[in-house]
Length: 160
Image (tube, rainbow, N blue to C red; front, side, top):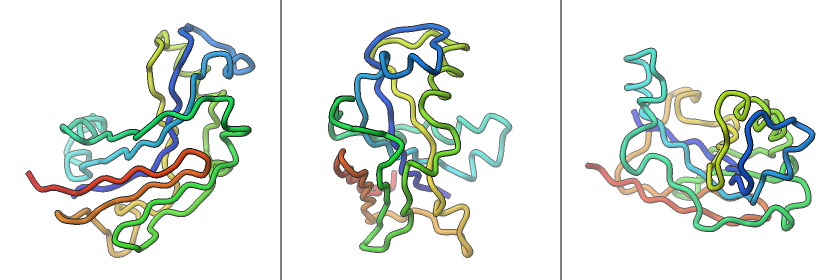
């Protein structure tokens, strides 16, 4: 039961611990795209939900990083995911439940952030698990994530 999740990812450019939300931009190098692929059957079988996100090839990112100064406001970017020409996710980062300053403040309060760390910000509505009927990835499909101002990430689905 493998699922897709289009997400904006934040790349840390300056290390920090206990970073105040007001200081978030000083620690961001730039932005990229992430497909937070999840095996929902594995997630449902254990209380450790991250196990279902831990398989090889399950967090493709890129294919590049756009520097912070190239994005005026990361909270105002169109984000979508299509498979075989069908748009399954279509939203805007303005709809994020947790904004980037809050994510950086919260995460850096638990663990120091290092240069090169990546924070994936969450996915919009439309994932396969939330659909009726549910929609799982199939071998031979290609996912395309697009984020305004950043570009496109394409990933084939290959069965192991």
